[in-house]
Amino acid sequence: MKGLRGVWLRVHRWLALSAGWVLIFSGLSGAALVVTPALDRWANPQLFQARSDLAPGQAGVALESVLQSARKEFGDGANLVFRPARVPGETLEVRVRAAWRGTLYLDPVTGVEQGRRGETEGAANVLFKLHSALYLDGTGKAILAWVALAYLFLLITGLILWWPRHWSKGWNMALDRGLLRSLFDLHRVGGATLGLLIAVSVATGAYMAWRPLGQAVTWLSGATPVKAPALPAINAKGAGQVATLAPALTLDELAAKAVAQFQEPAPIGYIVVPPHAAAPTRFRMMLADDPHPNGMTSVWIDPRTADVLAVQRWNALDPGARATAVIYPLHTGGLGGVALETAVALGGLSLAGLGISGVWLWWRRRSIKQAAAKARAR
Image (cartoon, rainbow, N blue to C red):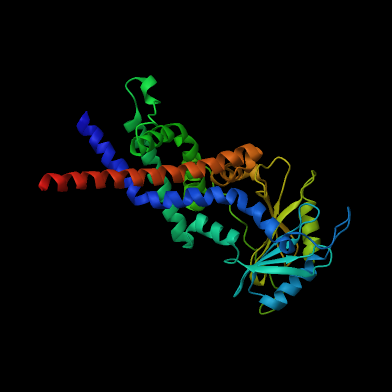
């Protein structure tokens, strides 16, 4: 039995020493991200607070004029994502993916630019890119997914090592017998009590970071993945002739058409305008029954003909994609308001604390053993 316990201890220790550094950083950065958005808005009112008030029923600046202005500056090859103001006093955001990558912050009434920020500028942006992908894009997301798997093994091995013969003794903590023993007991009992809470944060983060996990869920369920529609071919009148398209609608008219697809109120969360009109324009709608704060329902419209190509409600997506509607706000804490946000922050701090205490315990005990070996050799 002792031999088997030694195996579990080695597995737990070396998993922690190899993946623990990433887990420590993920925990600290995740806890910080709970409060960073609010602090960012407070510290940068020129970016987030509109200079003009949008009166009830007022249409605001024409999105088409903003689109044309952005195309003039960044070119037709830019990928643009509009985030309309969702509450009074917010700015209109336009995220740009071109030679310059960042976000424009515009007055929603006049369209005047109030400021801009590159995607790697500002503490909030830097922290998010580090937390979500380690600044390594797809590679970083895959690393985080594997580290999440390592944490699950850490949790299992930690529970095996903690599992008491007598339950009353499993929760004992000797906090008056020196720092080493106190930290060991806090690490042992804290890992057992908070491990499941931390596992939820780690697993949901991995699910969002690495798309193959969602694809695997859909495949295991036997469902067919719901894909974005492609632009249909437009037939020409004759051989070698250019097709005649319907008069183009403005982005505002396309937006009104997207909203009209629903009987219930459906504010627009995001508008994704692809480069060169080479793909459908996507309108992400915020339906009342959708738990995702940005909306997972999509209306896809052909920008050449203004035809609605597809309406994909969030609760009709494939299981892998549909799960994101709950997993995202669960991970960020938005699903449960301030209480869950507090729990998420505490979970992140606890993860970091377990990682730091585990590394310190290993290093301190190793130092004590080395000192004892040197003393015996004299």
